[in-house]
Image 1: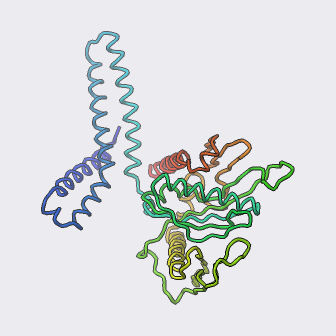
Image 2: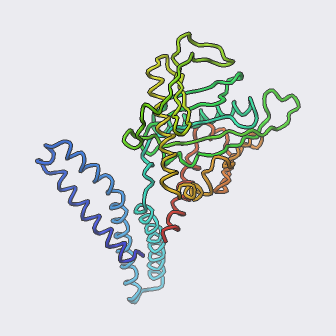
Image 3: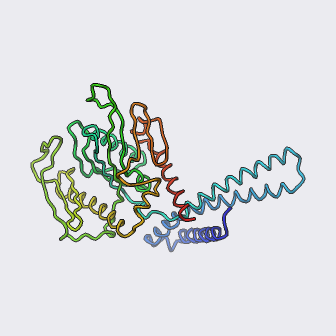
Length: 360
């Protein structure tokens, strides 16, 4: 059951929601589009909590009515039915109570941001690069299913067609909240096409998921930047153009280096590289300003440390295991085609559960 403090807070939120609904429907407010949009955004933010609270109140009413009925004289069959109703509504109340606590828990300020994803081949050489390509396709297919937009920022193609490294941005509501748990080392176990003896090889790929910074959050002094240009190249170092369109930017105070060579235009490559740089500097700033960020990454269901293996993709057995939550799914082909929602939702739920435990 909800405690008095939580009930009082939810009552206040419901009153605020009703007030916003009244303002939104006011013709004078509707005439001021910026003000109206601000109010509708505030209303949309409150509505999920308020709707869940109303569901809780309806369920509590049904529970109370069943409880009162049991005080009366009832025949055995009807009493059994009412007792079952009371048990069902009690279970639902417990579930709704947890959902409300999660909805009211502090949100990660980055959750609604776009993400910049960096995938790099680790141990395993060409096989790691090929698997980096598999993961790139997995995330872009997942983004496509969510209705998000994907844009390639930079890539270094391997001789066999995979990626030594690939950097791309995913734009869409909730991109970071869904993908932030993907940071870490992904391990693949399979027989390489170049393996004549049929032996299973183990390779690793590193994935980093960074929230994209907004210009107002990180100030960059142009004097702190060293910008180099060079000719973009393809697999094996072959030049794909003869103009210096590729851009490498070094942020000298920290030594952070980013580059982009995907566009034919030097200006576009520079803009893309700056987006990656801002995301990296935001991450550094957050680490410095909040000592608990490293701990938070651990609390995000085990760890978000990129040096630790978080998931294994076993091709011979067709299974994928997430080691942080102990979840194994035997549908590797579907997962590599972007069907990672079960991992995403379970990791989010586990992360929310740990946040609730920290708050208690």
